Amino acid sequence: MTELPLSGVLVADFGRVLAAPYATMLLADLGADVIKVERPEHGDDTRAWGPPHAHGEATYFLSVNRNKRSVVLDLRDETDLRRARELMRRADVLIENFLPGTMERYGLGYQQAHACNPGVVYCSITGFGADAGAALPGYDLLIQAVGGLMSVTGPGPGEPVKTGVAVVDVLTGLHAAVGILAALRHRDAAGQGQHVQVNLLSTLLSSLVNQSAGYTLAGAVPTAMGNRHPSIAPYELFPTADRPIVIAVGNDRQFAALCRGLDAPELADDPRFTTNADRVAHVEELAGLLARRLRRAGADDWFARLTPLGVPCGPVNDLAQAFGLAERLGLAPYATLPGDGPDLNLVADPIGLSATPARYRRRPPRLGEHTDEITAWLDAPA
Image (cartoon, rainbow, N blue to C red; front, top):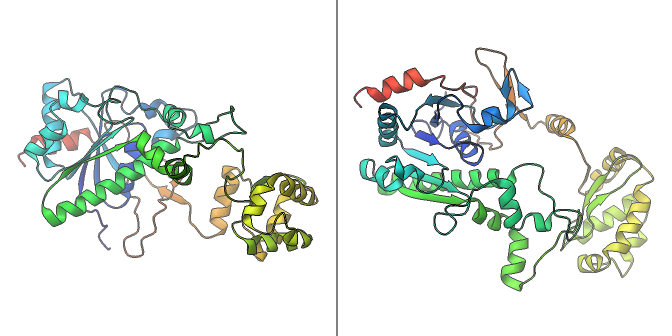
């Protein structure tokens, strides 16, 4: 069997909740040995974040902690603190998302890690950075609010809405993983570790892409537009005879195809709608004309009719329907993890590698499941 790309990389995971565990799960899927350090009795906060539960365990925790081993260490205990420092000394990567200064108080900060392990790639995830925002708590909902995401999400101005998932945490975990991989590449070339720093606010500002660039380059401050797009039309949600459908037309050719599919080819020649800029300028009139035609059939009927014409469209699926679609498309959306209990069906790693694809070697660990083997290893001479 081909060796995974991160085989032999030891990750000391002092992270908890979502951003850091998501990052380390990605590394673990690619072969890294991830040791998840958890506090006594309670462990990662998300172990208690339910419902829903599966086989008595919170699905929130299960979603981001496969392929890891769990060790319980009490950093207030002298023996366990010594073990944590030894783990830091042996690790290729250390990741943490405590408030700035917390790891330093235990002798586990970056400078302390670098002194005993110059090659370590040390990743710190914070909410607002390590300077003036160091004391601010970094919760995803809070970042969505103060970072501008909620100002462009919702029915309209003055009606902010959060996203349906902690997307800033996920994006931050993804950026952390990219930073760690880049630092590992540098270490392989130069023999030197470094400090990777990622924060939720900066990640969100970067991830707002065109909305951020509209402000930085043109001084435009966007507002919420419901399901519409500030620069493209038609690119929104429409009612049908049964459930809503999304039409996401990105160019004039697709718009002409949409008009043919709706038996309204004259709309493509209407001077109000000839170009994308014209359609954006007359989006209200256009939306009304399209909505009247789309109400004549159901969302699945329109999907079947418009898709072969090259029109990007699709009904609003719930998660069961979304997984069903992925299965029909051959995307293999499930990762089945066997264990000492019932098999767990989790979401598959989305990264496709032709030679070294992700492997699912371990179910998410129970709290302290590997404490004995890991502490024995740490207590033995290296």
